[in-house]
Image (cartoon, rainbow, N blue to C red; front, top):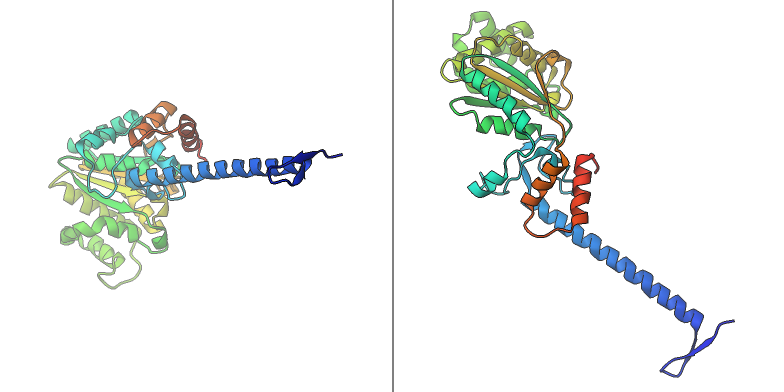
Length: 310
């Protein structure tokens, strides 16, 4: 039996009704607090999204952390950059070092030294989406002093267009086309739609591409960066794999970045890129923050990034 409780307005109300009302208000307040926390966290996350970007876009595929809120790519990449600027300030640039990537950077530095010394080098940078492959290519480009850098990016929309990737690579060097032997020159002209003829022999296209790269390297050491190799058209992947296996005394470095390299690159030297260690991920996040962040929120973001959670 419910007991009666007197209210200030003179009306009676059962204790059961009061308890029910109190519980309703309590649950409502709890939901409101939870909603407020979620909204605040979301706003903070989106704010960080505008403050953090990894340089060079890991084309796996976005420049900064996606607007959906995952900082996996940023924390694993090890790069902090300031958006809306061509280059970060010196102070922020020092903070934008590739944290936790000393081993990988040493490999790339040795590759550059060899290319500058007149040797050909090939490397396949392999790792999961967002792990920082493109950031390492960007590191290579920024440290290739004295070298000419040419970039290629595999594009999924062009995967059915034969020789589209080779065209990206060779287009800046077509002024040297006339120096190639006639059969190679004709094959490359046909492949690029510069001349008529039947489907070109891929062996001749490969030789022509190798000749163009070697010729360009006579003036300055040449570094070719091929990002998103998994999205190259098959003809280009075959040609570039062919070229990669024949770089010897040319001052050419050919570096691919891929999630899972295709069979065309089988047997080439690889650099496997893993996620950052927790200490490096935490240091990177703290360097990117512009204000205090709750420790539990930090732990959650780092956990999501390191364990590939959405």
